[in-house]
Amino acid sequence: DNLERKAELLNFDMECLIGIQGKDFVLLASDSVSARSIVKMKTDHDKMLELSDKLVMAVSGEPGDTVQFAEYISKNMQLYKMRNGYELSAKAAANFTRKNMADALRSQRPKTVNMLIA
Image 1 (cartoon, rainbow, N blue to C red):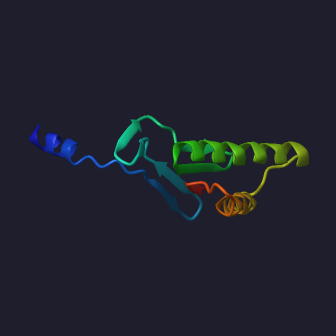
Image 2: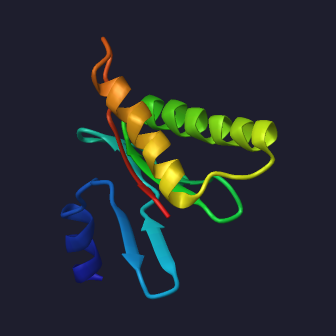
């Protein structure tokens, strides 16, 4: 009881994404807290987005930027699949995402997004 009380007092609201790559698998994990500065807005926020049958993206950062950027990447990958009849590979999806993130960083309003793609 006393230990739980101390844990509550020392509660730091930080976001975390973790990825582990094995020989023939990838494991992604994320917390579910949506917080900015000292304000915890949500504790049930899903930070994982399924891009395709074989690709998942985990995002963290400013809430508006993460949702907008993740949906933009997801919808463009779906459009690519509809136009070409096949999905992007993991490497191609990472390159596409990196290019869009680099363009956003050089724009008038850079995005504050951290992500892992697996």
